[in-house]
Structure formats: C-alpha cells, structure tokens
Length: 500
Image 1 (cartoon, helix red, strand yellow):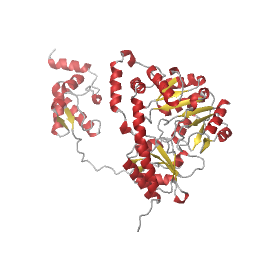
Image 2 (cartoon, one colour):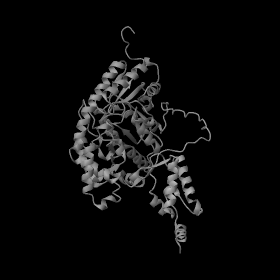
Image 3 (cartoon, one colour):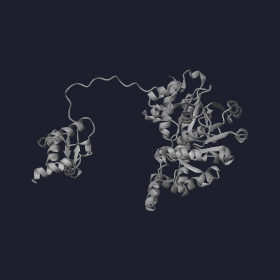
Image 4 (cartoon, one colour):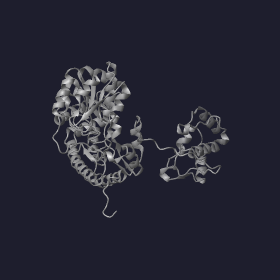
C-alpha cells in the first residue's frame, strides 16, 4: 500500500478531535487545509477561541485528525497572515485577535434594565444580584475581612496534609465529614461555646445555608410544616427555610430577644433563633427570656440555633450556646464563613438523636459529603493555635473598624440610633421618622452613588422602624468613613457647615 492510500486508510479510522469537535469525514482530501482554516477562523470569530487561547501543537492535532502535519501547519499559517494567531516559540500558536467584521453594523439593542434590587418584597435572587452589582464601597453585612485570610498558615497546613495523605484518602469520604474535622469541631465547640458533643454527633455541611436546607427537608419528612423566625430576622435564613417548608411565621424581637409569648401564640413547633447575637438587632437573649424559651422547648418545642458570628465580640462577655444547656431540643448550626471566608463553604450541624438519621439522609442525597482536602486542612488549623491566633487578630481589627463606623455615624448621621455594637460584624441603624423616605429608597440612592448597604426593612415583616444594616469588617476605616458620609449626604442628615 502506497503512502497516500495508507494515510487515507488511517484517516478513515479516525473519529476526529475533541478540539472544536473537528471531524474530517466527508472533507475532500485536497480541501483539508481550507476546511481547517475556515473552522478555526469561525471559532475565533464567535468567541470559542478567545484571544490568548493556545492552539493544539500541529503534530498532535494532525495525529488526532489523521491528516498530514502540513495540513495543520498551512492552516495555522493562513490565520497568522490574517493577523488572528501568532507563533510564540515554545509558547506555541496563540490567538491574538478576532477577524474584523465589516458586513453590517450591529443591530442596536435596548439597554438591559437594572435589576429592581431594593423592592419591598425581595425575591430569592436578591442577594445574588446585590453581590454581583459593583460598588466603590461595600458596606453590606455578613462578610469578614477577606484580605486577612491566613494564606501562609493555610498553605503550610495544606502541604502537611498532602505529605501525609494516603491514596485511599482521595476516594469518597464519610458523608458526615472527615473524622479529623468532626473531632476538631467538637473540641472547638467545647472550648469556645461550652458545647460538649461527641465527634459522631457532628455533621460537616456546606455552611449554615445547607444546614437550614437539610433541616427543612428532615423536618418536612417528620410532618413539621412550619418553623417560626425572629422578626426582624435574617432574610436569607428565612428564604432558605421557606423554600422547604410551608410557613415561617414571624415572632417579634424586643430588647431581651425573641418574645416567647408571641412564639407560643404562633403554634409553630420549631423556631429559628440567633440567641448569642440576634440578627440584625444585635440583642443578646436575656436570662429570663432564655429560661422561658427553654421551658417552651422542654414542653416539646424545637430550637434551631444559628450561631453565625458568636466568635466576634468586643465589649461583652461570652454568651453560652443554647445547645450547651438543652441538647435534646436544640439543633446547632455554625460555620467558618465569618471567621475565615464564605468561599470555603464549610460549617457544622448538631441535631438531637431523633433527627440525626433524617438529616444524614438529606446530606447523603444532596452531595455525598463535603470535599475532603479542605476539611483536613481546616482540622489542622483548628487543632493548632493558628485559628485562635487568627481570631485574636480579627477581633482587634474589627473593633477598630467598628469604632470608625460609629464615629462616622455620629458625625454624618447624627439622628440615627446604633444597635448591636458590642459584637458581630455589622451595625443596625434605625433612622429618625422625620427623614421621610423609605430605607429601600436610601439604599437604592446609596448604590447609585457607589455605596452598597442593606435596608433594614428587608429583614422585617412586622411593623418596624426604617433603618439600614451596615457591615464594617471588610472595609478600611477610610472607606467606612467615606461610605457613611455618602449616606449622610443622601439622607439629608449631615450637619451643615457654618455659613452654608
């Protein structure tokens, strides 16, 4: 068999290349170069091969297509002459520009309307939209100082984990989480939150959001159709529960925390609470109110305790977790999001024994368990002094930023009342009635001016004063001061200068 017949025979056996799904079947032998150049040109033009893309090596692509190397080389040369690709030596052949299109002017499209972020009844997509909307200064709550993430300590721990990792450890892990992290979390909760738990009671989850989702599914299977929520209370947490349950009746919060008499009146068999640092008011569940709540739980009620930022306290003593007092009636959820970074998507959930199998089933069928490697790294940080050291650093930094925000509010929003300053990563402001505009309007105007905040009304369904929820952990003192100054100008509350 001569060479051309051998090439044809080999080419007939080829199925083509994964690259651009190229398939030479049906292409005349004499037209291969033109065909390949055309397909490459089309891919550059429509964006499948954006600028910077490295094309396959000529020898490899020719072998995959079952053609001679000269076919690929000539096709690349044609695009190079047109200025669309360039040879970069050992860097290969790289796309440098799309072809100019001069056939016709593009059809004018109407501008896309800006999303109605600050409406009175925000939908489930509102936080995605808010996070995706750029702003010069971001004062939204719930985000720690991400620039302080302990990269060096994480890398050291990761190297140590990988050095000691067996091949079997890279398989599917325990749905409950790695034993190392469950043990580390049990130790962490014992020394920091007063909770005594066996590692087998700890379920590792993808943050508090997943913890609420798993509880919603498990409770639904046991016949629970409603979970009461604090009001004002976290809009995001309420949305997660409402996705799985029929109702989330609101229970008012006062200066002592959730009103247990109102909770009883709802008839709900369970309630979601943030007792150590109520969101968003910052109230701590008072001693008498706590005892009243525990009596309600002891009579058959179930408490879901969201301990979302209990580590961050500045001017008050620690508050023991409810789970430490009544483990048989409290589901406890915590996470690393406010201590390290939300991007890690790692948290933990402790539930009473009667719910454990249902919650575990929900986790199993959700994702088969969290990724193993980050769990092992986090376990190493928690069992060493690294995480405690990081927490001490954050407390000092967050305290300074909180103080900067309070000072700026006194200067630029003198009529506003600050709530919840003793702990956490945010402040709640209530605005004077004479302001005369809805907090959603103020938040929308602030975003238009480059400052991102959350209106308090998002988190309240019962009548409540107008206000804002402002995060201070993620920005510098200068950014915080500038952002609050913008709010003051927009609100018309900033003090006038003499002679103005």
